[in-house]
Image 1 (spheres, rainbow, N blue to C red):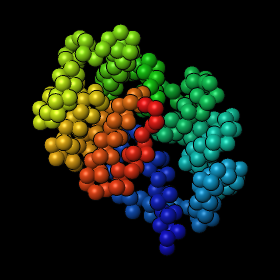
Image 2 (cartoon, rainbow, N blue to C red; image 1 turned 90 degrees about the vertical axis):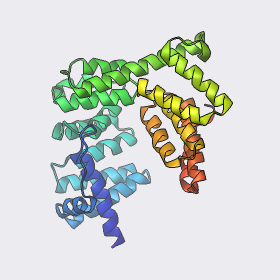
Image 3 (spheres, rainbow, N blue to C red; image 1 turned 180 degrees about the horizontal axis):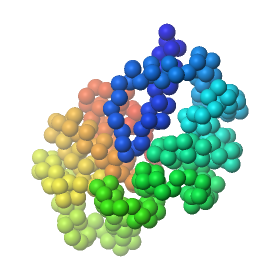
Length: 309
């Protein structure tokens, strides 16, 4: 029974990867989806696939790929298997073969975010870009281009993401992601400028003024005022992870632990390439969970803290 439940869980994960794109997630009934997915495959297929995942988990990549290839013989057209082969070959540093299976997967499902993400990752390890396989995939697919822009954004390749967005028609997706990218580029410029010449207190404009006032309130320990001011800052700059961090910190001191957790986790969603701020957020989350008596969660976030940042 336990094995069947575990199998159901494993197949559910892959079913979700197959049927969801990053930008178009839908709510599903997990138990029913697992059962339906399992019903489509023989016991032999399930056993082979489950064992392949196990072997990959213990880094026995040759054994894992052999088992996956047997699965592929049973199911010759299966994008999940192609994707799993791509990831396993990549882990084994067999990038040419990994790339071919990644192409098979994305050509089966051009809308799939994770298939494209794996392909881009493998190409990156080969020091190639998506341009090198542009003619081999459905590059004009709208969702594929949206996913590619998101992948570049998550990888902090902001200019590349903008270049993809410029090829898309106007939409809410394009507007929101373009705004996030420009905000990230601005933040990067502010950080570089601050390191070179400009102390935080001397930053010009409304953004700098908010940060200066926040710094003063934090030094005073005026957390009621800090919560209010940081909320105002978020209204003006809703993509700034620093303001979410400050708002979460203030909520923690103002005995609003659940609200603090929600805001701090939002800060992580907007955070890009800032280990120092990430560590501060992790420490705050650890403190909140510790105060709630959840030592397991507290330790989880403490373990995320990177030394030397």
